[in-house]
Length: 510
Image (cartoon, rainbow, N blue to C red; front, side):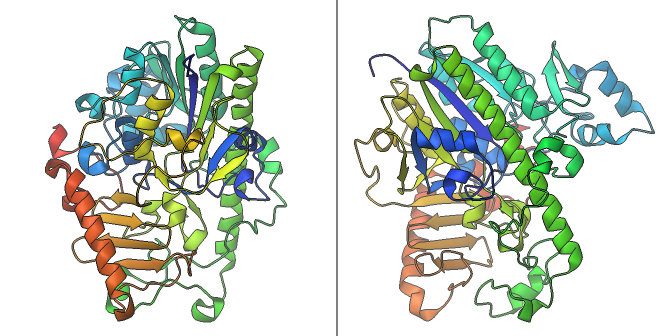
């Protein structure tokens, strides 16, 4: 490219690939995401590196898998030093009668100390900054030390934790982390992102602006989102998402893990005949959660529209590449799960947990209004963004990603000889081809094998069946070889007792 492009990088939280109008969801209103897709490309096989937020985000920024960077679960601590909290928060934490809006931050921020998980790695944003990009961040960080600017960012407007209460978020303002009363975090994040465009120190240089929304992460209660967005979905039938009973491995499932292991289980099939009528309380939970989730997505979409409009109003749209993705997928009743990879115990690798939105647009560079069916992963983003930014990069041998810039620009139809994606979540690992998925849980299972061509809903587990022994063995060997090539033994997730309940620290960071 003769002129280096600005980059607007939008990252959402717990956003399933299915949760966009442009992805075929006829009920969910996302006109601005659809607008990005219409002016560029939508990947319908785009995957996170781990189906939970902190490991996935670390993999995006480092280009490495969790068993290389050492973050294996969402970070429950290590956000900041409690001394950087506002006086109001410190006083509330010291009270014996703390009110509800302070309880969530107290559980994660009281007595906290920052951990700099990124310090041992070179983020792609550091390379952008070293090559003339001015880098700004607004929103959720959740990779340790949310207070201190790092990774090449000179503009730093973060939220304190991972999830935030939508109307009572803790955000960095005037040098301290403050609780904002009655202010919707989605709008605050967009406001701070737009402020970056006003406050740029080097307007002659290209910029990288990361906008990390907390939406559509829970909570999804009616009071957590503006009424105008809740009202959009009050009468929605929600037939765009499955309506099935709880998954056996879900917290309110019908079977325990011990029962599951003791059975000869052919797969996960739900029917009223097998489990009896779906209880009314389940339906009430379903409607409330989907109403809030859809409202959160649409409210976020409106702020994406503000960002796109700002670029156009400032004459920047023609020179800016848009990247839109989510940190991990999300089940909103899919498979009877409410959550992502940690929505079950053991953790899961369903496509609804590991597939994420992937929208890319750049006038004159990325062809408009098309869908890419090739498989790509978040660990490919590192090199891809550097390629698109025309930043020189000598990829280290230990980095597994491959640039898909030639796919984006229409100069290639494939960037890998074999189309395979790998995923991991602690001791759970996945290999996925276009036709098959193998999930191995170390050391003792349960394991899964799905014929995605004949069973795209992943309902019939074929693992252990003699007629599939050859394909199962081939996939297992390929998965083993790949992880053996890239795993750093110090951070091998197979050795970590990850169960989706949060990571406090790591022996490697103490």
